[in-house]
Image 1 (cartoon, rainbow, N blue to C red):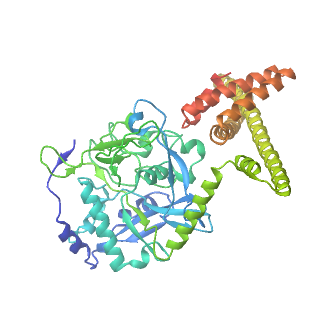
Image 2: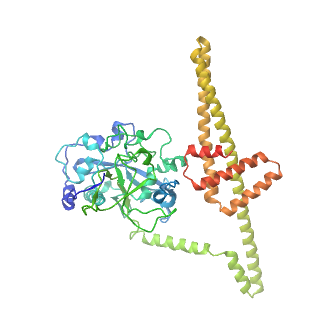
Amino acid sequence: MIRSVAMAFCLLASTAAAQDTGLADPWPPELIDPAAVIGDAAPADLILPMPCGGGMAFQKVAVPTDVDNPLADRPFRMGQSGSDTGFSDYLKPTYLRGAFNDHDAGASVYYVARYEMNEAQYRALTGNCTAPFTRKDQFAKGDLTWFQAVDLMRVYTEWLLAHAGDAMPSEGDRTGFLRLPTEPEWEFAARGGIKADQGTFVARRFYADGKMSDFAHYQAPGQGRGKLRPVGIRKPNPLGLYDIYGNAEELMLEPYRLNAIGRAHGQTGGLVTRGGSIDTEEAQIYTAQRREYPMFSAATGSALVGPFFGIRPVISAQIVTDANYDRIRGEWIAEADGEAGASTDPLGALAMMLEAEVDPRRKESLGALQLEFRRAREEAQESLAQAAKSTLLSGAAFVDTLVEDSAEISRLQYAALGLRDLAKTAIGDQRADFMRQWMDTNERIDGLRSNLRTYLLSYRSALETLADDIPPDQREAAFQTLGRDLAGSGQSQLMERVNSFWEDLTLYEQSPDMDEVQLLQMAIDGT
């Protein structure tokens, strides 16, 4: 239940309190990086100090891109393809770049808090350092307004810059600061970033194995009865982030917008939370899930306080500074000029020049250049057509392998059940022989499953290549040409697989975020 209350603290008083650098008793280490203390996780990538002798753990999120080009960023698809909540979370293209550059890794990076802000960290930022910090302060902090969340990030940044400036990530004259995450930053990190393989990244949830209770506190028996829980005691996502699902629902920087069939709708609304909370049912928790709340309570007129509104800070930085202004401006002009040039048909321009030219020698040279352009264009189109045909054939082969391996796994599973039953009734050497056969069969099943996942990744890659990299008219032409070639050579069985893969491509374009189970089922059903 959402309720509205008066502001929990005076902003000016909280700022002054946070400036107190006197150290309280040392924090129990699980208040800063619990998974590295009570679990088996590696230490966090970065720990920033806090007032009262505390700290906050962060993970680095790598976003591969051309770090030498300040305008380069990484495209990815947010959302999911389901239509029930498509008005809010349907697939849409977006772009992301981190605030800092890692030249060795060839990636931009940003930092996101490893855990939701806990009670201890909230106390430190509001100057409540008198009472000892205990394990009870490990619980996620709720009961916040969006405005309080934004101001806490201001208070923390000001304290860091005043008392621990060297700890804050920076690059040249660009110094980091803390704020709430944007939705693309949150979702890219929640999906696992580049730590997740493609099949996992696009899936509805970031885990393929296990169950929701392994990763989240949510509304279910034994899950805390609607009260926030300690952070960092469930399993992490692929990036090493904890409580991405459930516990506190995490406030976003930007306001809510509808999804207008693949783009942000023009109307701007209330505040956004992501990830669900301890009060959210399992079925409503998935990576693309978004929820809107009003900024203010209509009943009281005060800023809305959510009992489960929480914070997962990110570290960002200014983009344009005096030092890089000229470089960014120059890159933009160069790209703009390139786009303008690319938008002009060179053959059309040459034809106009030829028509206007009166000098016979120049006209001959322009004619030769026009011929070279035509040849180059034809060669490029032929190369693209060949690539499309090869990808169609590869996809058909992957379909064939997936179907055969799935059938073999089913056969072996049935055989394993029979061997297990025989071992139960056999005695002596015969029982040992059945057990060895049973173990060998299970090893073969495990091997086939591993191969199956590899083929699924290749199958998805072929679908992505055709859907994203080949224009629809050219892939249609390649499909028709390939069909005629296979019919002419009497390869009817292969053509059936190509047709099946072509149908899969249509389904894939409608739901490119299929998980592995759905992808495999699509390949099998198509045959």
